[in-house]
Image (tube, rainbow, N blue to C red; front, side, top):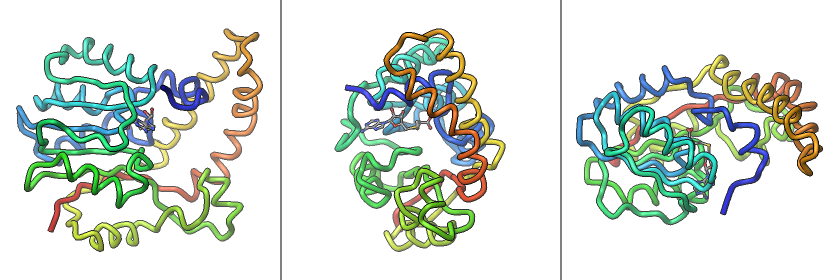
Length: 248
Ligand code: SAH
């Protein structure tokens, strides 16, 4: 079981697989007033940076579920590196339908809401693992400006304009699901650049060291097109943030 190979190649050097910087992640952890011993569940936990750094900095206990074999392995290495192996555990699996055996204080899905079939379904799924009064974290893109055409939305790698909302509309959609938005940390263009531009050197180096791999054409095509696509579309039109929600 794994995710499409292009992600495992292009993001193999990433600690955070979304437009958040390590500062953004620390800001979010501090903003939530996490306490030692708080339990955190992270669906689509990637390379485990959220759980490992929050375990080290705030003393949380965490479980992460991720489908990428590579990211899962990197998460376990990161836990060793930060000496938090006794606090965090990582499961290599599809997170769809995953419910924690012991309920958690914080249930997160950061940039992987397809796991629950969209934002609403993911909130519903996370809620099944959450203690009463707990916090749900959703990391999700939004439109900074709505693309004027469907072609531009596709340039942002959205399926359609309707896949995402403007920021106030996204906030309203959380309210419509009967949740208070109690905190948010938004990424900025520099964070987007760290997420996207950092993939280009990784891909270039991969091409140099794997000239005979049968995936070369895919990686070459992505490296050829991605810098212009990203700067023309995603960088101008897409925002990204993590929203902290509590049931009303
Ligand atoms: N939350 C992490 C990773 C975000 S990228 C971070 O912020 O760094 C999206 C992640 O979802 C990837 O790590 C990918 O491997 C994972 N993923 C995709 N589909 C999944 C699924 N069905 N179940 C579990 N993980 C999934």
